[in-house]
Amino acid sequence: MKKARHHSQCRAKTKDGKPCRAAARANGLCLFHGDPNLASELGRKGGRSKRQVSAETADPLPSLDTMKSVHEMNKRLFDEVYSGETSRSDASTLVRILKSITDSIRFTDHEQRLIKLEEARAQSENGSGGPDGGAPV
Image (cartoon, rainbow, N blue to C red):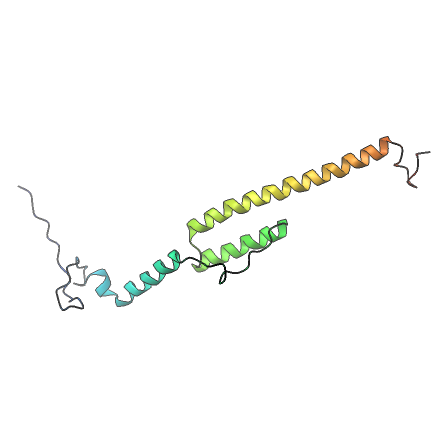
């Protein structure tokens, strides 16, 4: 024979004056009646995480065209996650994007260096790479 599990019910009343139907904790109250500020706090957090930022109210997008600017953005993102302003999942997505930008900057930098080296080599092979800009002696 199975034993019926007994859940004690919260002893508080709802706003309508009806008995609260939630399960009680050790103090005889449910989670929300035991901490009246919890519901509004969770509501604020939920609303913050779901709000859409409009282009008019958002901070201007930073220019992420240098390694330093990407580094600054990473620090800003860390601060926002630490303060709870940005969720970890949103931050994770942004970190992947920042990684892609970092890789792109590195590739572009290497490409520009290679072009300069090839130009210098071509000038040297054409005989215009001497110390005075003329032919080598």
